[in-house]
Length: 147
Image (tube, rainbow, N blue to C red; front, side, top):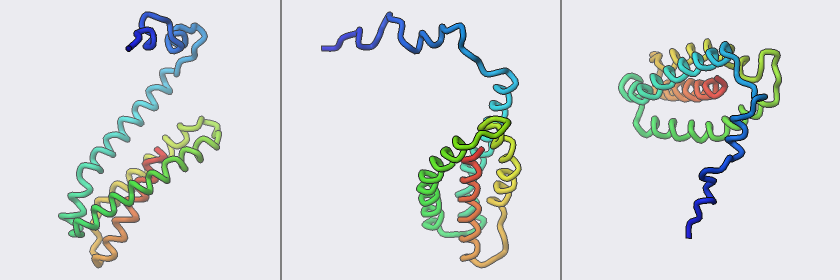
């Protein structure tokens, strides 16, 4: 039998107490706007990249579909390993500007350059194209993790 009190209906929960706390600190407007603008730009770059990269690899670089599939799959596996490691590195350092602001300021230029590199089609052998695509795609993902 289901008990409604189990769901804390009509009761003051710990979350509600935290929201009602007059000593609660809020994020300053300037910092909120900085993070929001950064997230907007980051989201736009990710949407562009993820929408067109497979198409670019297949139709412009002319690599095989199985290569693109394996690249995306292996890159996601690497992300599963890399993302927690990057999080630990970021948590371990206390820069003057704050943990995240340092990375938010440092990563836009590398992300922009790597995004352009992702969509560059060098006139090289197929094997070299595959290596180029792999390196730029994985590097892009690693820098994106930091941003």
